[in-house]
Length: 591
Image (tube, rainbow, N blue to C red; front, side, top):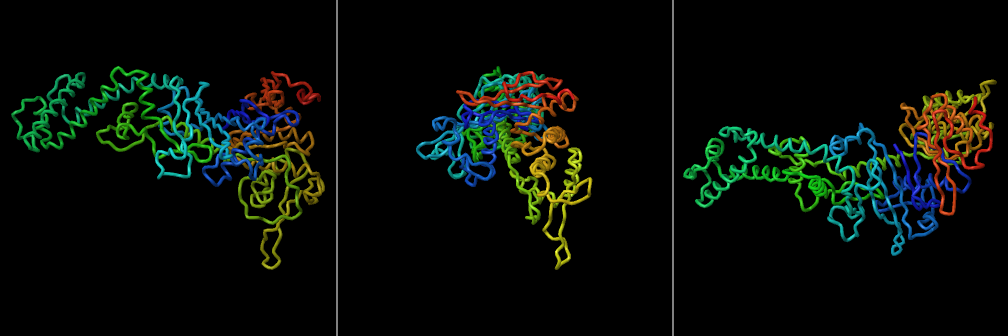
């Protein structure tokens, strides 16, 4: 879920402006203050991911959700020399995190798995196109980024054959002062030393190196070095005499000879054994007197991708996973001692966990957030008397509620839930789908009507024959109840409805953020009554202050600013509202 959203140089916002996002986020402010710009920026990103056909498209400002014109029109003060950026703070689902993820992150991160992704765009005057400038990953409470990627020039791709349709990102900067490194190293140092000791002892036991060595458990690194020297001499002698069996070089008086004769005699096997022992010696030396600086160097070489690809504005995995200077086998062997992986005696290629997995994880979460995000605009469809089923069976009513009739026509369970909600609203009506019969086939046709049944008279009436407000609020009700684990964007849901019904919307929102539905709402509104109901629910203990984020957007000489207004345990505002915004009495606060 989204926990914070930051905008820089977008329309009225100079920024960076941070907006704390909670299960229910209400955005207030005067007309033309920039309230709508917040939702428009989110729709711009969703629209790009949803509608752009070219994977190299960075931003799609004109589409079905929003039309922002060109970069010049939506960048702050129309200054194309300025970069536009957004930053999302995402809380990840622990159940979806891979095991390797926890091998990288600090222990305290497990309590709140939060990553932040910042994407910056610029305008290329030569091509008159919006281009990607940088992608940065933030983690924990460190204000500086952990890692930064920037796009390569088109002719600088590391592997032209792999993809000419995606922007290539090159790792530009690693923040070695980031708190992650020290926390990670503190947890892993003891484990690394233990792992290499265990690996050495496994080799001794597997190849019976310990049978003629007393106290080998403590002396094995030194014994291993002697064995390596002995194996070298045997191989040199065999090659000099042109033989492939050690039985022909018994004249060598070496401690290691007895071990070899009892286990292997073929020179090829001796060479293989030498290679294995050399690897272990090299790794033993590597971890001797191991320091944090050395650990950082290893991680930057082995555990961070040199390159990533970018689809639209989000990074995806490149096949070029490792630094070209370090072969994958060495990557795996080194990672073997950071974690209890299977012994490299039975080596199988395996990708170790790498830091750039975090940026891919954040990218996937960001993509999922925007793709599943649902928007309903300020003006909903005018009702019709008769509808024809279009075949749509989706779970989104559409930005104007156009798909709502189809959804209710095919979902009787949802229709009953909507009627239950209308009963709580005390509207005096119940919804009914009136189906029409095909006169020729005597079967139910695709033609239907949405009708309201008057609870007092039992008379069926069309939506066109009652107040306009019901048709305007219905898409809000249906989408709130239909969605699951989704971020919902609503503009002025209170439009054309009575103050009492505006307050009831607050109760609906409170119901739809509960775990069984788990939706998140970002709402641009002017409704005092909606706010009052949420305050009342806090006072009654049905909501917590941290469930609500109230943001007031005001415009000034330096651009629009976002003021966060806090609530206490009694539902009262800790921070004062700007003068003159709500002048009406807060009667419901004392109800």
